Length: 486
Ligand code: FRU
Image (cartoon, rainbow, N blue to C red):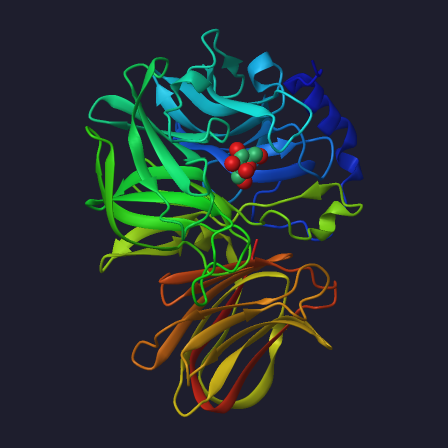
């Protein structure tokens, strides 16, 4: 048995956090205090505050036996760290407390997570995954219950993987609890399983509510299921989903499906699915609903098997996206940064209504800011922005009229992963509206009021703070606004 405990993790972080290298540390996004972070977990508003837990290995900036880090916020932007909530300290979770979710029951904050247990020497095949519960009276200290695991492997139906069975997302509906879990059918197709319970401890299998038809990845992780307006939305993270046109070019993807859930029979009837983000780094999203009824999503702003430069000597890796509110407009999901971010705007720089033909270096700079830019295409062939620019270095956001393609290009962004992501965007009254958040080592581009979002990590040099705007052919900039954030 290992000797991981939450106390040991907290002690280690306290003793070592002065060794953190702050280059590339983000200003208004959550990162781990020290060490590694991946998926958001247990996202909930509990007694007024937002709690966001995360997959965490405190000892190195690499994935390892998973703990749950824990942070709290009253506005979703400024987070404070709380003690590590879970450590892999039980037989059934000895090799990791994997992803899961939170629910409030009788005033307690209840976490449901996957216990990962190795059963042999080969880490890729010799393991069992089961679902367990930990609960807290004060929202800080968690106790794993004696009845764990509450969903043992014996409750996995035939036709689903007997190994990949993880990432419980709990929700309440009609006075009952439900949980969705990610799995696969054992022959290369992702599957989502639905279970029901009266008390969070005794669970029965309802049905597999969705499965890949062969075109959507070989294993599905991190499902989430919730109501949005009068629809149900199923979200999941398919592994190794083949690309379709410009979509799904990352190794692993995230997908939302708009449909309707029949909880009685466990059938999710959906008519379409689409990516949740069109950039590079957005994985394992999880949502919560707040006391204003907003549905808010946060994702891990990195992804598996890509280079993360802060792993070399910086002692931390991983960050969360800005929390985004999800809404349905004209039967499509849109994503809007939570309005709380506006309270952090300062030093407005504004240019209104000017003609552009060629490149203009703007008299504003920064590495942590928000831009709101409205282009009127006029006679241009192409227009766009160069961010974090200095000499040859820049991150390019460009739009080409001929094929209506928006590009996020990080070929010259600095060190770290490169490449380009492309998506089709229709102009509205000949206009393109971009709201862009740049934060030290990240860029999030909200397009046409959140119709699409492109997210990516970049690692520019410290001098790369310039902002350029350009057009090939004549275009009109209706407005260019920049605020520093924080
Ligand atoms: C998704 C994931 C989950 C798992 C966790 C382990 O990124 O692979 O399926 O629970 O990470 O850290």
